[in-house]
Image (cartoon, rainbow, N blue to C red; front, side, top):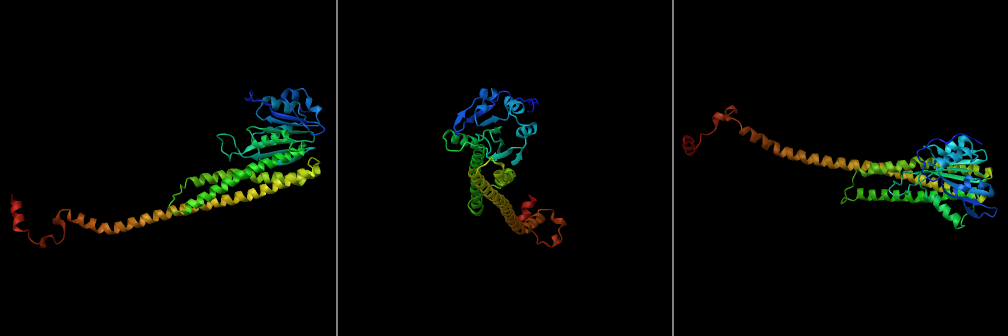
Length: 323
């Protein structure tokens, strides 16, 4: 067991254990407290699931000193920047997945990270920000609607994450449809500034969805040989992997549509500018000769050729000039 000291952190007030379950031989779930974890009561149960706050100093210390995980695995679970992946490590799996950020006041495209260590007798999940998909699986455990093996819990979390992501990308698709309709409607003027922002949001999600597809594909490819996943679990994982592949294709389509919409908006704006310049050119052609003649006769006539051949002024005009 690695005895390296936990790294220093300023998040001392974070609760280390968000929730925990111990599963007996029948699969029944028993709630665990942080004191149960510290006192080593995990060994009483056949399997356990601990959902920890990654920013908690106590949780970090327990992972380094008492979890039984090697230092490399703990560092991978606690590192700040991650990308979705699934890697076999010894008798377990190190899994990083992402889900939509559905927390109040947050941008949904700012995907939240969920790190997992999936072993035969323990599942450890860590998060820095709340992940609703984990809460969904927690409710399934409490209502006894899901198997409580490690493989079943991992497959359930992957399924819930995909469900949430599917809803977000369908909203993106609807938003692209709305922009397309507004662009084609001559009565509606589309604000071009929304299109680059929309494309940025799409790309931000795409950055993590593509590696998430690869992570789930790795679990599907290697999970059956690990003995961690049953055939039923593999069916759920294959379904999640297939849905994420479809979402990746949908996201790519939305990205291309957003680029085309922006180009069309730019072209429409350019055409409007050209029309205005055309009207201005016509007005210039009409008023330029008039302006020239007006300016010509507004200057001293002595300098104009032919000024001496002008007809004499009427007598009445000369009379007024003498006054």
